[in-house]
Image 1 (cartoon, rainbow, N blue to C red):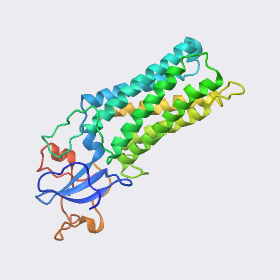
Image 2 (cartoon, rainbow, N blue to C red):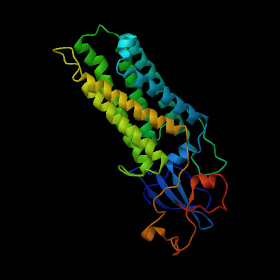
Image 3 (cartoon, rainbow, N blue to C red):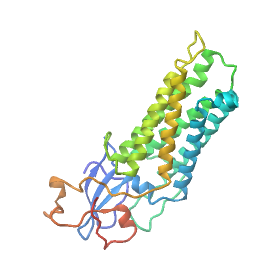
Image 4 (spheres, helix red, strand yellow):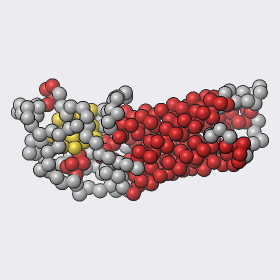
Length: 308
């Protein structure tokens, strides 16, 4: 098997299948020593059943998204003034960066083994280029830093059109590109493919909302280009509305993060020849469904969980 999951399976377990977009492994099946099949998924493994770090990530993304949504509300700038509006965006970008960094920490701290006694070892920095979630969280963090720059420089109301394009629009565009790339990577991790349709999976719904939000942010960035000849935005209405709807999508996805519900993979466990264990045992003929990694980690080895 050329591709492998980054986690070490339980003692005596044998890898029998892996799945994921491109070179990345986001799901794997292991045959345990007693003959049952254990299913592991990277997002579920990283998130676990939810912990304090996960709740902080959700809350910080909620506050950051709310700041961007409020800042782009029609009439808000007129009510509080242009500088207060710009400060609202800058504050939101700081919350985004804090949340993105904690999500990066969550990623690199994931337990490297499948064992109920294994606990995440908190790390502040780490390299894991074989993992799609590492790329997603790293690129997302870079995007938030670009948004820090663009919202901070936007506090200067005296910038010329060319200056605004250089120090405000350029980092905004780069941040939007980073968010779009990171969201697609996270969406692919949740769906185990570059494109998927898995509406019953909470993780997939979060990934889809963030991807849609990133598309709106990208549209906003394009419309926010300052025309050097006039000093006007390319399309101020689209710029504002794109930011608003993108923030709403991010807000909805962040709220869902508060309710981490481990979900069984709705697709069939195995198909075709891959369903046969070494030696010819057929797991499709009345055999118990595959255990999920969270079932195994709880130590409930005698419970047999069928897929939804």
